[in-house]
Length: 164
Image (cartoon, rainbow, N blue to C red; front, side, top):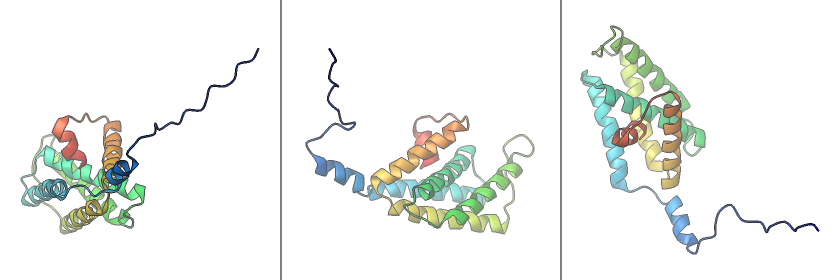
């Protein structure tokens, strides 16, 4: 005797409130949350400009660049690849100069690095404000994966700040 196949089970279990799920994924993140993310990014950039940046603030800037790259990869807000790449290169050069002597220190910044990073902060703010909640969380989780794949361990609120 042959047994019949078990009935097909959908991968996603049906839910009673599909409208709530759709609104949750399509809704914009709360303005207060976005303001916090933008404020942290702008504070980190201001510290870099004044020469008082810490390693945490530097990692926040680097994490924001990774998040911007993931947003660009999603295709929601497109056309910013060049500006993000310039900012990434500028941060890499700044990192090389800051850690040149083996310890954390300050360095002078070149005008083209400041211009690239200021433009990046403005464009990333624009990027974040255009995304829905689900798109933003997907980009942040992708950025966490990319950062985690490099061997960096992310903890608690530092993980949220570094990728947001």
